[in-house]
Length: 216
Image 1 (tube, one colour):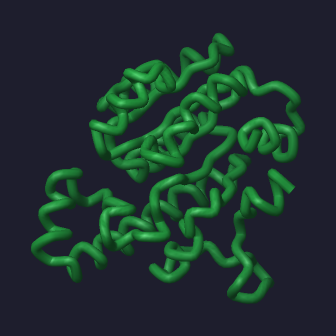
Image 2: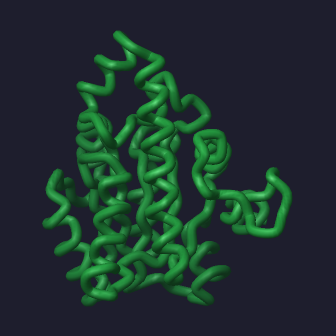
């Protein structure tokens, strides 16, 4: 319902074939995102750093394909988008790398490959394993979290700034991004990322919340 209503509200589209939804997280709550994309008829690319979560969703049949190669992900995204094929593709890697690759594609080809975007990392708990920084691999991140939580926190905040910078570039060209109620925008703001709504007070974000804007 969230993905369908995001399409209705932001794309003025009653059906989402040929549209691309990019997000992250295939764990407990977020695991349904892959299935939702296919039900809605769009191309869903969902990043996840934990391979166990990807394999679980794939085994359940909620996730159609898995790849750890960004070149392959972009090629599959383009193919499914062109042919209007419903697809859920799990990218085994950090979502920041995925967002930055989409910016690179925009910069080099002029092509905006994503229509809808969101995030379901556990940003209500970003410094204790809910969000892994792009600068490190998953296992490296876990080790640093255990050995030097202060350094881990610094890297998470750097990663959040990069995360938002990439989203902002794509949103400026027409992608619609929303907050999924996971404290992503709040933690990004605390990290110094550019998420405050222009001309508004500091409690208003430039991107909407799914609760008020989409489900409401």
